[in-house]
Image (cartoon, rainbow, N blue to C red):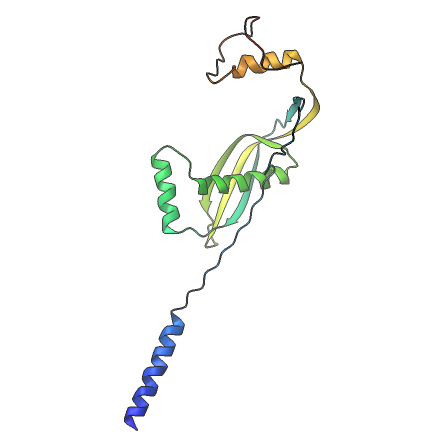
Length: 178
């Protein structure tokens, strides 16, 4: 009888031990972006330019993001910061906050955005990303002119060297056919 009771207790203990070892994993993925994929078309596409109307008043908007950060993520963030780079994890948080801010202010873009990232003071597992900047919208779309092309070459240069110091001259071959 004692032997049977011992075996029963051992099996019960083993069952409880094994069932409590099961781990629960939660994976959540959410993404928000204003521009995800550029359309690829065959043929020639006419270059287009637009004016950007920027609000003169700087705005501030905070976004709460639920995050689960592992020890590996923290090491990745620290390593990127130590190497003068931005972690892809942090970049993802910034992109999400920027997209929500632009959507909230009905903007196409944010000019000179600055970010502040901090843990939520009362909610565990939540980050508060605050975006400060100037909302902007694009307007007056039109096909570019030769003057536009020359200005682009003046400021951004031509080719791989990025010669931005030189004025466009007649001996330079234009990369734009107008």
